Length: 201
Ligand SMILES: [Zn+2]
Image (cartoon, rainbow, N blue to C red):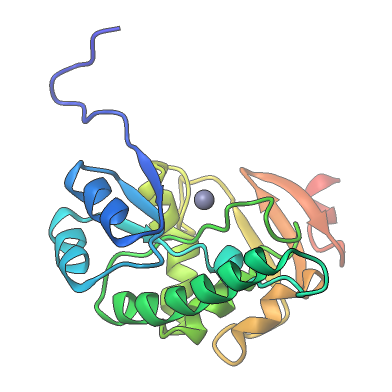
């Protein structure tokens, strides 16, 4: 199908970890770089110029397996790259690169995806910036801002309800029970306290 001339091309996400791969992805026009563990100053400048999103995927990088459970080479590799990720992403996050939240879903326990928010804050984002990465920024990257990303009239109800205060301790959100309700695309998916029961009646 021929694409209308004013419509931008298909966005590409590059799962790039080493410096050169990240640089090539950004130069090539990728919409986002997932991981970006060895990002350097040159690439940070270029990403800001291009408006490229960084999706740090720290849930993968910081998850070092127990040395008894994996071969020594793998343990050493994970330990090394975990530190590389911390050192480089801390610089990128403080430099103001656009960040969207992602976890490489499947490599960490499902249901604890919001652990990623705490990782982002540990490496320098303010809690509100981490929340923005997981909401408005993620919707922008996915080109879904018309329907998702912020609580606004006319958009789909797509939200979570929590009794925790994310600005006091964002790590609380990593515990599944602290998320009391989930509404996805206008449909109630979880409602531990039956807050939405009157709507369903
Ligand atoms: Zn990946």
